[in-house]
Length: 155
Image 1 (cartoon, rainbow, N blue to C red):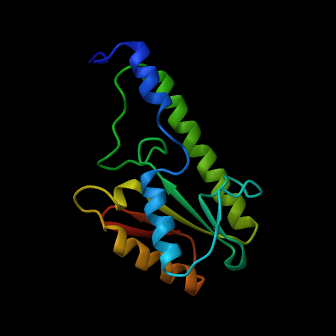
Image 2: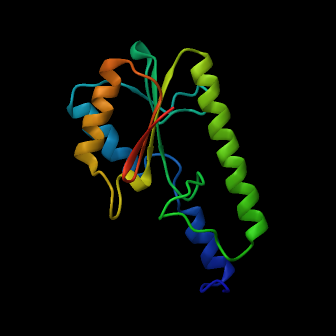
Image 3: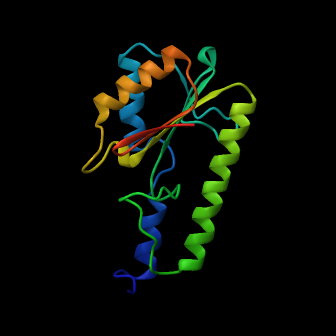
């Protein structure tokens, strides 16, 4: 199916999509701050520039959008226009994410990945549940963790 908007409009729409300070990220940040956790934002000195990092706890939090990070869930759909471009881009994003996670783990950091589908739509956990799980994860010092819609995944 062809795109429903002209290329100039599509370009403007895509340029408006932010990589930092997204709505899901702000919900997590504000919720953890209210619970007393203090963190640094977009730590440039760490692989992958985690959205939140807790240096004393050696913990990093990524809040991933399901489309941009290739999460195979109900929110992800391959675009029908320029499929080669999108496959290459999204596969590259997935590879970069995995390299960053492995590098952080090798450095002794724990990694929490919160997927967009965990916060949005049917089967989502909702912000309160996510914040509760994230708080326990930060306090207990357990392994890496992924929060997805309808499930948890220990790494």
